[in-house]
Length: 80
Image 1 (cartoon, helix red, strand yellow):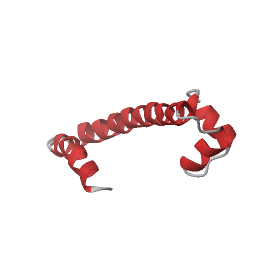
Image 2 (image 1 turned 90 degrees about the vertical axis):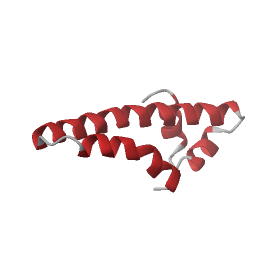
Image 3 (image 1 turned 180 degrees about the vertical axis):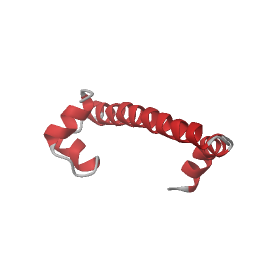
């Protein structure tokens, strides 16, 4: 992780570490992961759509987004 990302995630880590009840801590970790997956999906979709808005072809979008296929880039942009 980059330093700015570490700084952004530190409050979440502190929040979870402050939970003394380990079963409750586990539940909070699982909830955080679920929310992060939803956030990741939304951010990737925004990114794909933003690249398209800049005039990139689907193949270029896929290359920028980790060498995924143009089909996968299209799916990401459409929330799949």
